[in-house]
Image (cartoon, rainbow, N blue to C red):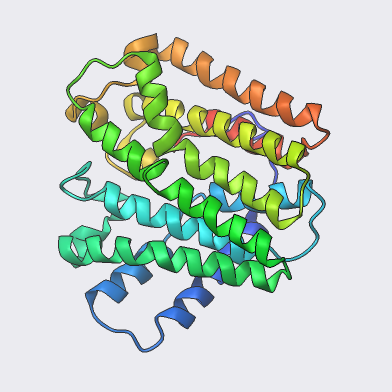
Length: 300
């Protein structure tokens, strides 16, 4: 057992594969490109991270029977996630100076370059996803579904819409339904998409794709609830970003509405719900169960 109380499952090989895929993507698409925007994209994409969303793509693919190398598709999801962090940290958003234990992109390259880099990473992710799907030999129809799923998760009905609702909610007293609406979009949409992408790449059945989507939506919300709890209970060093930001920004949070114990209980029930849904479809691998439980056991 490790410090989280979970039996260790080593995802080091998957993380290394995603890191290589990101490095190769950067090398291909930014070859010969110089200047602060290109440098900001490189900085955002090759930094450290949990790579949770990428690993979910890979494990969903395997759970659905996929046997190829899906790391390039997983890397495309990480491009979207990295873009969201670059923009989330901007002064007009959450205004943070630290991310993943190092200076945020706008602190290193300036606000203009960081903003432009984030915008450029969205079409980069779409191109990378289509390229990866072609590499897996998927049909044009499935390739289109993969790109649509990724872009919908990152757009107005997903992360961008959730971010706007989050900003509009600062200083207001939101109820639980309003809070969950924000975070099912802002945080949960891309985690749900990661699971669906893995299933699509393995030509999973509609029933399995639906189960993957429900699992992703549930652990995505559990992830955000745990983030809210950690913002209060963890240190800046543990988090790799500034602790106590929610209170500073006067955000409604799950601990504020439910208490720490109530918020933790809600997250744990979502994880149980996620795992049971996959179990019912015969698709709950040890790795996917571990990842779901890690979401609430982590300290960063």
